[in-house]
Amino acid sequence: MDLIADISIKDIVDILIVSYVIYNLILLLRGTRAIQLLKGIIVVVVTWAISIWFKLNTLQWLMNQAFTFGVLGVIVIFQPELRRALEQLGRGTLFSRTTVDENQDVNRSIGELMKAIHYLSKRKIGALLVFERETGLTDYVESGIQLQALISSELLINTFIPNTPLHDGAVIIRNNQLMAAGCYLPLSENPFISKELGTRHRAAIGLSEVSDAVCVIVSEETGQVSLAMNGHIIRNIHEESLLSKLFEELKPKAKAKEKNPIWKWRVRKNG
Image 1 (cartoon, rainbow, N blue to C red):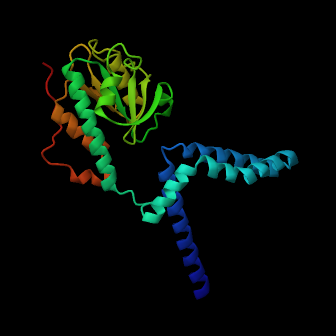
Image 2: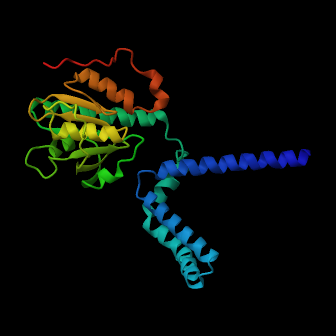
Image 3: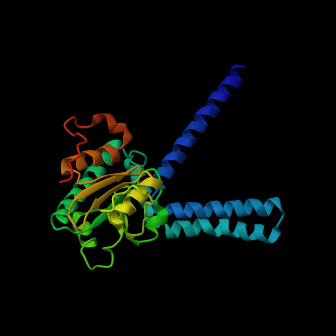
């Protein structure tokens, strides 16, 4: 019995370690082009399993060749990513992306965003900025122009300058990276939305109705800044309130209890 118990404990520990490694590898690959490779591998494996199940010899031979030469192809194509992963492993930082690191990224992104919003609002330049959260926005990202760039206030400002190709769309931000600009969003069909609101505001509300995204809108007519979440919109939001809400919604949940007590959710009345 002791031997059986010992084997069971070893198996459980073994499974837990492997699960932890796989989970962190998925986190490492998420948001990179390597995730597309992973999807391709899954398709090949499924096809290989089907060929064995139905005894499709030719297809099985083809899949075996794909496995044989695919490993070499992966090493060649993803050499930069593999090198980076090995360097991180050597430094002991492969799986050590902490909440502190994520907070620093969010802080920087929100800081750049606020500088851009201040500039755009002061000059009444229309803008629509979307932060992706748990609900994936890939379909909307693919509707725009792919950027995959580091967020900066200068880039955001130039994106929304009038009479430029990307002016009339939304910018979508994922994992503190500017994924795409000029994106098309679904318009809200809510009949109770104020007639004063234009297409940008309706698009922001529409997206917030079908996802958990956080949308910031700058009005082209008034320069007022609005925030749309969960199917609702807060118009003419004060800069400090916007900053507070962005930190509250976008910071890692592990740090949710460490909010600054002076940040309050305040909405300035329409004036």
